[in-house]
Image 1 (cartoon, rainbow, N blue to C red):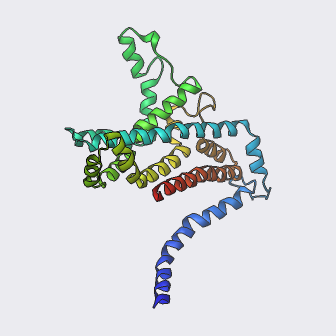
Image 2: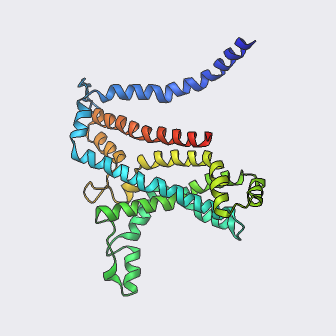
Image 3: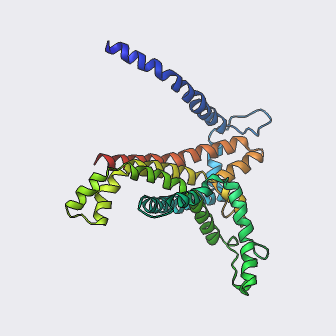
Length: 289
């Protein structure tokens, strides 16, 4: 009887494994093979071994793109979780107009990041942007800063715009986790003399670990694979200063370097995989405690 159940479970898992193999394992295997060639997308591919990977780590532009991608993720992912959690705690409290507030907070996430980037580009443009004309009418045109002219200010703008757009999605996950916590636990903590901070630390946070895991993983993946917001807001500029790895891959691919761009995509895959696995392991260990 037990063997029949195992066989039935295996049979039921076959469709899922088939889809996993077709849409993940096969493309990954094909991509690894392609990354070892000099294929330009048109002519016949020639095997060149690890030359594409060696060339990547010798390219100063590529190394800068890794730095930019990591800096963006280090700024964006933690902020998204902190702001999203703050929003969720506020929306879970007893305040009026929560429904409208949730809609306003979540609304930017519905808009395409490409469109959002162009909106902020039109707002921040020097000499002709909306904010420039607003300050000009106030007699403060000389105080207007060109936020996208320098690397540091451009990165700050990109991170803040990304957090502003997607904090609503993070909020929804945290809010679902907060509303799943039984009220009786808070009442018991209050009877034991726990203050609001202690109640949050010993009741709320441990029970929010599943929500934290979801948000941390999705925010890391989204931040490390950022493309749209940078492409539309700064175009990777000034120069190639704010170019992300995703944009680099696209430009190399359209530059008849398909084999090389595939090698970079493999590197990016592991660049995302490692922090995701680490964060999943840490949050899993925390939940087991």
